[in-house]
Length: 321
Image (tube, rainbow, N blue to C red; front, side, top):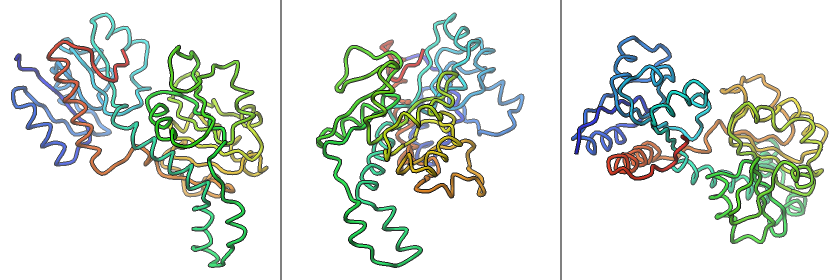
């Protein structure tokens, strides 16, 4: 096996670092700390590497003459989806992979938790505990729902959406996915842009898992919120920029939407005086949907699985380009 130079600035725990170091003893491993200031030495080290794992500077990837494979430590890759980088990688047949497989399970479970918490009125009951300590049993019982026969639309039907569909399989729901270019094979019906307005008008739950791109920024805007069924719920775990937050706040204030569950906002962190915090029935988690206790080790193992594939010359997992 040929020894390779692997550079990483992935944010790893000590356990994750240990797993990575132990599994790459036959290679040269360069650890580089992520920093807001990229030093000349860090750039030089990144450009020396044949394999890059983490969040490298895209300019270093373009400039590197030794690069053979790039593995991004996140599910999102918008900063690497630029014409210059795509052309540079394609010209040398350098694969770009990401870590969606690591985050599909926790993100899907996070959405599932929000769906069930909403159905069973957990947030409303907790608000009573924190602020009123009343006992509105009849009101909460009457507002509790079953997911049975409800329509759920997953906008951005990728890896996370597929896993969420699997988690929802035991529930008798009407489930749809949305993609700009629906594929021929899927476990659930997948609609395209022409069918989106009609589906929005019938769905009780709309789940936004869109990545950030020029075509998705502000995707959920005033027009799309107005197309949604009155009293529906909105969930967003993709990227905060895909939601027009002023339009969302207005939809909540007007009661067009019954609730919103947000794990991503724009900006992040969300300032303490931002109106989203006080918007009615808006429940916010601080970009934790993909988080889990052994995240670092799972990131490393995903990279190592791909490293074996790279060494053996077989197709890589989570390939973007």
